[in-house]
Length: 522
Image (cartoon, rainbow, N blue to C red; front, top):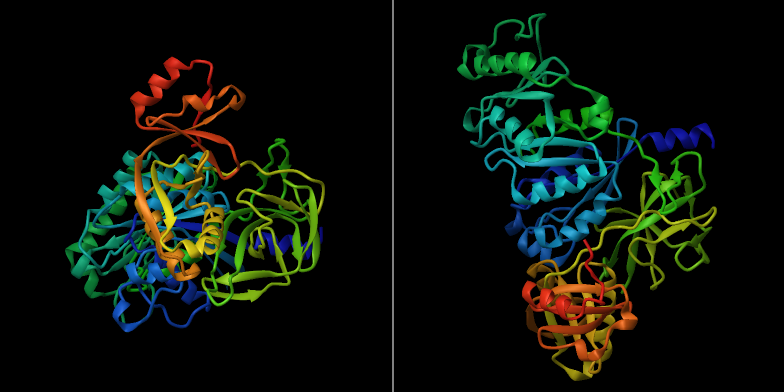
């Protein structure tokens, strides 16, 4: 491998932003894009009436509700680094999409709302990062509003999430009295509102050098006392522990006011890991630099451009270099083909990409070749570890209101199911379509997209909560085992699945048919 390629790979930083809805994820993403020069004007989620929408929210339903329900990919250059941000869905009903996205990153940025602290969705997403040992950087947001005490938030990180923390900077005041941040790492103070310099120097004792109004306030005194406490009783900074996901560097700021964001970005780029090696199913390690091109599909998105009925497979490049027009093999099928129609992203803006390296995300034009989790490689055939798939909990029977639109109905369902947000089942004889999802919002998005993207109105009839169980030994299953309480259906791969009414029905079935070996997905 050439030194040039090695340098290109080492300059990559690929991360996802995780948070509970409304913690400020989309706003922070946009401010980062502003610093990278990728956009000139940030439209915050608050700006609905002006017609300005967040750059990372491209789907119509996202603009209406001000939430992210898909994972956007954004790329920009900053200070000698190529940064790839994967903006994950904040809404809990789309956790499956988020979990898969977290398989495609090397680190995560966790946003916490100062007023609300650590919320339920943050805990779920944190666990996935912890499971993978992903380094986590924490940004405590909305410091210009009143919220919990900073020491209380640091305690919460350790008690609720079980991760040790190190404050890279510390707030001076909060809400209307927010005066700025004391930057422990860079040994300076960054005032919140200033007409003068962006930074103020500290003397050898760690105090503001010279006369300043801030030093006369109780907030400044309190910040110095807190920092003294952190120095004496807090955790030591260790880059090794950060890289193992055992210690999270904590930054305070306000994304909406664009304060503390640039300091965070600069420090993050210094400590965040470059593209990391990955394990294959065969338990070989794929090194980003020393091996031929390889990557895996972590997301499929239909109709990103409604004017063209397109479908894009998002690929995380794991190793080597991609060149447009190169020949690759799809490991699952053994088929070889040329990668000619490829794109990179800034949310809904796309451009043709000629080359990319390990750590980058590229989009492949897909006519139905790819599935989520597929491995593509230009060298020997192998497969990366499987991506998580979830057992749905809610089920709906779906039909087209207009029987003349059956063709569009089936085409729309097939494409949207391949994205992985909803799961497809059909009854054995009548082949009625039943959709399964982790949360209710997924059905609403499905209905909205069928109407707007495929011009099909659908009728959705709740089947209720079910317990889905797949079968190891299908050959022993008889149709007579199917009943109102244990409906036998097929999934999109024609595997048999039982949909049980509740836990009691599941146990009753197992007691009656001990020879049938059932299992669930994640």
